[in-house]
Length: 105
Image (cartoon, rainbow, N blue to C red; front, top):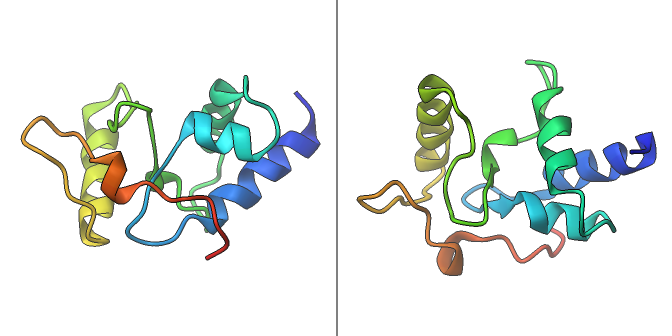
């Protein structure tokens, strides 16, 4: 994957507004590569701790966190809830309500 794609992914993640989420596949499509959902995950994983990118606003297409670590899932949920994102009793975000439409914020 090119550094140009990494940069586009990063720029898209920076645009996700508070109180909204985007999926890995959605970001890949917006970046111009429908098949790069895993690359989105790699880019987010590589972010330094001091990065301003709102990594916590990126979830999977099922409306769930994709982090295998419980602590990271809990942190992501807490950050999203602070922004007003609601999870159902199964820990799922309603994408019909909270998914970002990809428009400039």
